[in-house]
Length: 434
Image 1 (cartoon, rainbow, N blue to C red):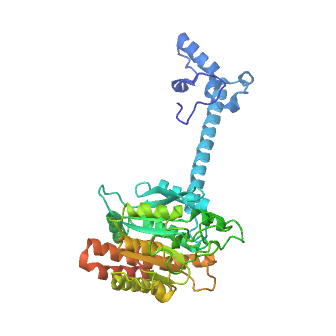
Image 2: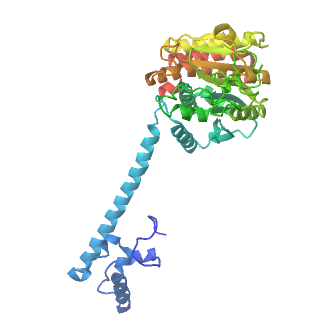
Image 3: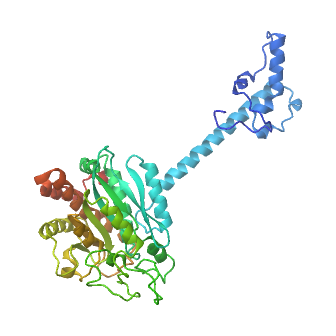
């Protein structure tokens, strides 16, 4: 094969021997007759080592054969230089396109899927894609597994976004979160340590069908539920996936009206999306240290449980860590987040993924309700994506750092988490230095 790819097209079926290229010169006057005959044969076959643009060249009209050869070689080199320039331009354009992925705008599902694939290409040593289920409409549900391979079984952090279709700031945060840890793990010792000790399982969009439907047009923008059809006799679609988990299912804060936005389904785990999360997490429940599910809006950090008559055994610790996260959030842009159980600061509910994760035995489970407090609601403007993600990242990393340090460093957990959250807030982490 030629050093620049396939041989130049000369209309010949056989491939020209590249070694012959070195003989494209005129013979010296002292060259033997035999050598001269060989060289004449090469000269006469020159079109076979030239570009297709030279096929029509009439060498008999050129008075000096040496000039013809020089012209041909120069043309060939110029064409090679042009091909190289075009190749580099293409690579450069692709590089620019990757760099310019905008984390501060909302993206439809195809763009998020492409983004996931690009991350794997750019970071094959630490990022992989794990499909773990299908939606009702047979779309793949997949997560990004982010972590440094150590060759041993690792602990893990769960994060899901987009369980409610209309909460577009949620998938935007998951994308931002993954980008941040990938930007910092090589330069920030703390993030590097956590990436070695734990894997991050991040689902950018859990309710894929609903999210795609919310992008269809203005009439579907505020769609919340899944897209499965209602039971027999019901003309409405969708189940509230965050009322469909097996945690005090159907007892409070739900509706059996299939047209309601909080319709809990016909039974626990009636929805394929809830089944997928349940199966994946249950297989790894001994390794998962923390379960974070990202929603909007109201600026809240919710701890288990949604049922007013049930209290988590580690409620006091959940509150302390949650209050620390709220403080870390406040230090970034001055936003106030309220911490508590759903019955205390929002409304009672049952069947949530957060409550189910805590009942399963995952010690730290939180629901983030991101900005704002109702001015824009689910239609949070894009100019608020960046500050929302920055503050939520600080809060999430406070929780994750605490959980990590408690597991791997014991008694120093609280002090370490507090110090690192303070560093995040004042902007001295490696992410801000890049």
